[in-house]
Image 1 (cartoon, helix red, strand yellow):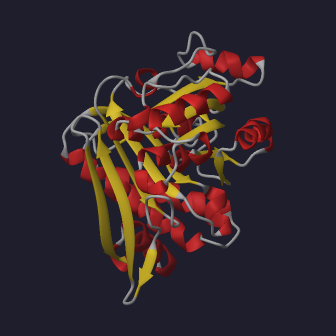
Image 2 (image 1 turned 180 degrees about the horizontal axis):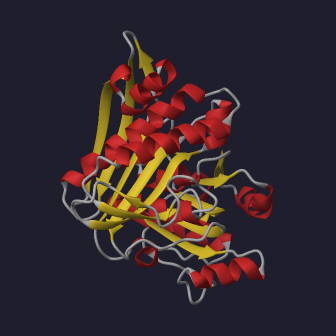
Length: 328
């Protein structure tokens, strides 16, 4: 993949963040997601690539845009797989809470897992713990190993996990062991990436969340030197067969990094919609301007860029088109 593609992809996440930001705190997650999806799809038309959505908003009959199998890009450049989450944390935006992101991952064709829309058991860590833990170990063993490798008492471990009823047994065990717990209301991608950023204070992320979000997090962690392991959790025979149909011959096996994002290059980009663990949200400025904070990473080089951009809102593509339709 051309290195210029990394910066082109940031423009895609920036516009998705800008278009969903007006819906922060308005209690309408559907409109927020629609705005982000429309913006992301519009901006992809200008990107020099021949892309295909492998993780998106659903099947063709479920999603009008960014559906699985949809072609993206202007027809020039490399042939790539594209994974998108136009608004990761729709509930966060609707409720005005932290950690909502616009997210894209791109890899050479055939590298990204075609993850079915179901739960995945996950264990995500930063560079210090990469290769040191195993997804199927009991929680007690995982925490003890992590504390030993990090050289800290177990009581100083900070574990992030989604605040869900299904996680009550895990949370109870961790509290019994004395670990610190950071409960996450939503934002599975941001949560899984957090251990790779020392400033978050998060040592590891575990529990179950969406399988597509697991692939997106793996793209970021590969560039950051971290690791995520996953295992699909089909809830019925139909979901199991769907996983098989999407190329997973054994849906029960543990998926390593190479299973999720391949062994080749991968690019990850995200723009904050609301303030989060490692990215600030969209901030409105005087004179019809707005500020965005993004991150773009490339696994091949290990380069991590934080980008602050000032946008003049009347010049944004989707906003111009909306204005024309309203006045025409």
